[in-house]
Length: 239
Image (cartoon, rainbow, N blue to C red; front, side, top):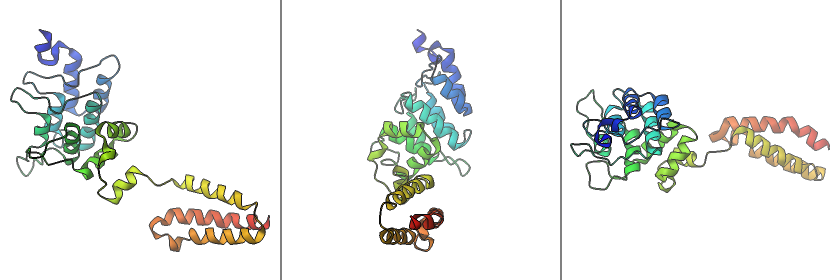
């Protein structure tokens, strides 16, 4: 039966495996969507799926960023990190192999974190216990939107404990400079309705709050806001 043949007798599946092995992100994404609808769990004559190949070749034949994007595409189309080849090996186990030599560093930590998160690697296995949060967040950062949010929801990344300030900022990014300036501008419009004495007092408070000398951790933003306030100060107080 066709279902028992390599690539399940479909040319699209063969093309998908070849695109994964070459690390061509655009071809992989095109074959998984649209009319092609290649199977992310298709297998070759040894039972290896695209995820097996990706975990084996990433970092050696395929660069890390491309590998992460291909992994995301496969997982979002329900690629199975626990599918076994004819030797009984899963992509999870391929990713967890130790490096064979000094020149072979094994599966990159970012890709390993993704496949572990997707497969929920059990404690006590030969893989790392749990998911390496820092590597997982680095992998998600490589994706960009909307793939980053889609995969984060799939992997339930929101349930991970933040391990550093960088992760906290990733989850709750600070507002952009444009957004901060817009907010300060709105605040100044409200001050226009106050008496002159109160306007001066409020302006002094804002200038003090955004003075660059008091905002070393956000110096660039503070400088922009402070300059904006200085430019608007005279016009506000004269009202």
